[in-house]
Length: 356
Image (cartoon, rainbow, N blue to C red; front, top):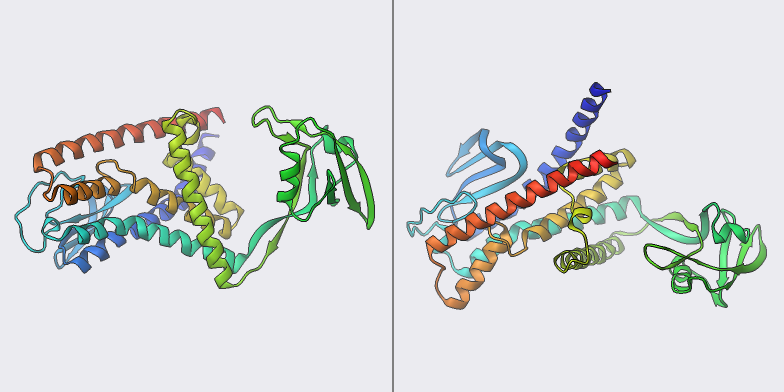
């Protein structure tokens, strides 16, 4: 049993580490390319956090792999970052010697690359695999549900509810959800025969919505590149809005951080499960994680890209940089907060695994 758990853990790592490595590489590549464009000297491009494992120095840059595979970094000359290096000499190739707008582009380039990667993978999934869509045909009827009580069966096609013609699953839920415990007329088709009855949606204890206990049949619809790209844009925007709304609910106490946040352990398990479901599912989940990584990094927390952007915005308003001493203190506080957050999500992941 113990050996089986070790093998399962290794299989999860074999899948998760390359996925995480790709996302980190793309993020840091954004910073790297933007720094080169801005004329900033890049001293190190590292996949993983120190200590350094191995690498090769080419020109001014040390390209390396480091021991802790939970991230990466691009070390730019004359930049106060998580390395706490405060050596700024005013050389033209240093980060602080560049105009604010260029520095902002360099910092924002990492999250932007993660968003672009998400768009690319979403588009690839929709272009090559199509999009799974719901129909008005029933796939499953839950036992002892209101639907089962009136005789609904799998493969029945819903035609009308409460006098409203039905052409999509969204229209079904739009009628049923707000009408908990209200009797509704329902019509459906079975083997080309029209049938009808009355159904009373049961109130869901968690969401208070009305439910009758049916699940839709899914079909795969193929789409061209342009439609896939448009769908990917809507998907990316919708997920971004939902994520920021979720963060807002956590800060206002409307959402449990313990229930909603996931760390690398839980994420690794999810990625492994997605890989077992198919390459398209793995690509879709990788796109989702890439987008979450971009959103996390633009939060105005010191030591994250969002924190650096906040410093630059303040510098633009004050027309002078924040003092070196103050920036170092704020960076140290930011790193401490991130370490606390990492410890929390790791502990939370372990608890979730134990209780499952």
